[in-house]
Length: 118
Length: 193
Image (cartoon, rainbow over all chains, first blue to last red):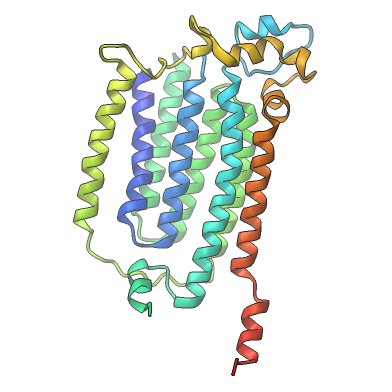
C-alpha cells in the first residue's frame, strides 16, 4: 500500500512534467508548474508521516518527550509550508508574464508568439 | 490501514484532476480541475497530521484559482488544436518510465536497502532520529510555543522564513514591474523623436 502511494505521487509529478514539456499553451504550462508543486509537497509530507501519528502540537499537560514518541515529523512540514507560499508567488509572477505576453501578441499559444517575434 | 486507503483514493482523485487539467480542451474547466487537485491535497495534508499545511494550502489554492480565472476569463483562447507533438510526448513517456523504475527501486530498496523511508515509518522513528527528534524533544523549552512546526519556522529556521519573505517581495515587485501601465501609456502618448 505504501509503495502504491509513493508511486502514484511520482505519477502526479510526471503529469506536471508532461504539461510543462509537451504543451504549447501558456495557461497549461502554468498549471503544469502548479501540479508539479503539489506532487513535490505531497511527497515530502508523505516521507515525514508516522503511522497513527498525531500532529506535532503540544496538548495541555503533556511533555515534549511524550509528544516526540507519537508525533509526525515536523521538519518537512515546516519546509513545505515555505514551499507552498513560494509556489503561490511563482504562480503569480508567471501569470503576470503570461498576461503581458497576451497584451503584446494577443495569444497564449507559444507557437504563434514565436512566429510573431521580430 | 483505512487511512492509507483514503490517501490512496485522494491521490487517485488528484491524478484524475491533473489529467483533466492537462488534456481537456476548455481552459476554464482545466483551471477548475487544478483547483480540485489543490483542495484534495489539503485534505490529504489533514489526514497526514499536518493541519499547519492544510490551511495555507486552501488559502493559496483560492488565490491561485482567482488569478488563473481572472487571467483567462477576459482573454480569448486562440491556441489552435494542433496535432499532438509526438516527439515531445515520446520523450516524456520514455524519461518518465526510466524515472518511475528508478523511483520504484529507491522505494523498494535494492542491495544497500531503501533510500526512501517506508510509508508510515519516518527517519524520526528509526535508529538515527536526526534533527527532527532534537527539535521535538526541546522545542517547548527552547521556543515556548505549543506548535512545533511554528517553532521551527519562526525560531530555529527564522532565516529561511526571512528568505521566503524576500522571495514573496521580489515576486510582487516583479509582477508590478511587468504589469505596470504608466510607462507604457506615456510612451504611447509622447512618441520619442
